[in-house]
Image (cartoon, rainbow, N blue to C red; front, side):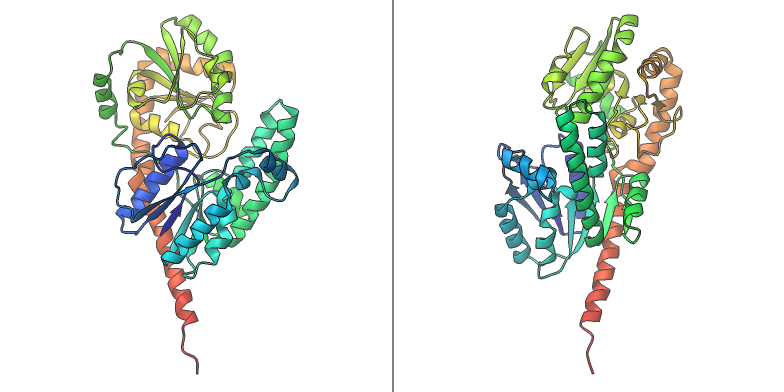
Length: 416
């Protein structure tokens, strides 16, 4: 199997890396001979990943993203900027070489931005089956961004990009053998576009042992400060949806919470905080940047907030908090795609007053916090643990292998 990802394998600093790493590991553990192809940005520092049983790890280096030429081509040309950013002739030549050196049965492509390489994979002599793993419906995400941004220029570019992405996605739906999505809502969306496509739900997951309440509590022993009570947000802080979420929460809901409890701290934890996020830092708002271990923050958190207003897909941050035993307040969009019920596994709140009121309710009710975190922990162990999800993905590949084997048998039937 060739597992082709549009990013570096290690370290696990984004939701996309977490999903790809754990899914590829599960396939390797079940006996697949996995060659993992990672994509590095020109400025990425090559990091050594732990040995998890992959047959090979191959690194490709892409060109710079969002160059003036690519931006112009993304506006006036037939391909979206997200696809242009990941394509280079050097990468195409290297991938051709990789496919020539070994006969692969299966290729798993991680997302529509890799669409430009589909033709290369289809030309491979082994004619591998192709499974496309949709982390998000990219056109939907871009359209939601266009609807939310106040900048007219960005809105125009986002709408244009959304239309091009939808065309790209349609081609992938018609030309890949199977598709994995993170939620049933996304499955229904894709099937409405391509009713004959093979689309199955492979949800995002969480390492339920690493984020167990016991492991989270033990992590506090490695740090000195344990007394501050936190309201916590976790995410890559250079991603526009996360930037919008924390700035909106900090300016709308947080002032009331801080006024009622001056000892409370809003902790924004995640890599590469943007200037807008850095500007939020104050006596009661902590912006950490990258941290080596998120678990001490979960251990001190009274609640995790997920005030997302744009975006698509399912949130690993919610699954991590559930596994860690931290109660959650999320917008409905933030919890989209997760089989969690309001007031059973988490609290759902959309408006700024509703968000603040729900957080206050959690702070004031230890009984509610206990009830929510126990139900949430039970849910992630039974439904969202990586071995459970990996078994479903492996079954998809087994089915593709059976179809491929039957097809090859028909091609080699003796003639009379």
